[in-house]
Length: 186
Image (tube, rainbow, N blue to C red; front, top):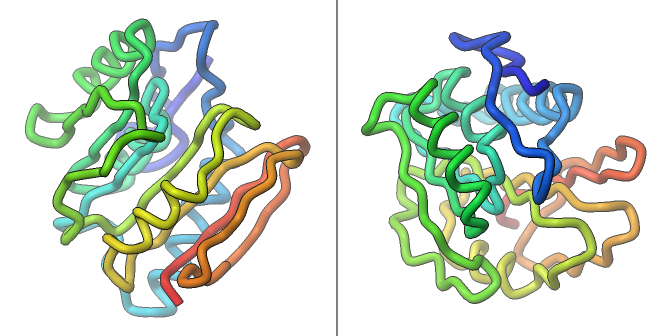
């Protein structure tokens, strides 16, 4: 059972699906938000108020909905699995107001990410492990985000990730078979 771990909707249950998804665990969500909140405080960055969380390979929406619960103004989800999209929509409607979320049904590996990036303060990327080469996606993102945007990338420990030169690694945490990287523009 997946629950929101912090904020206004703490402990609220999310609908899930057994196939196709691997929701980010509560431990990893807590750690990620703690790290980015600490970074934002130290650098006087507004993460939540009037800001947008971009959830790529969103699955059932765990990370984006966690961000809404913690005070994010809006979430943009990208997901392309038809069966997962139904669960994502259900979860969004149970937590968000209608104007707080948008869902794009796109394959991110071929997407140009043609959205407005001005108010995006956090990007979270959680692709299926060992399935995609993320280099082009990371390069595309790094050319569009603002200097204060934080990027979280969740991968398997065996995934080979090539980081674009204009991204600076802020932190790298390993949790069993998972690595979470946190970047910002150099």
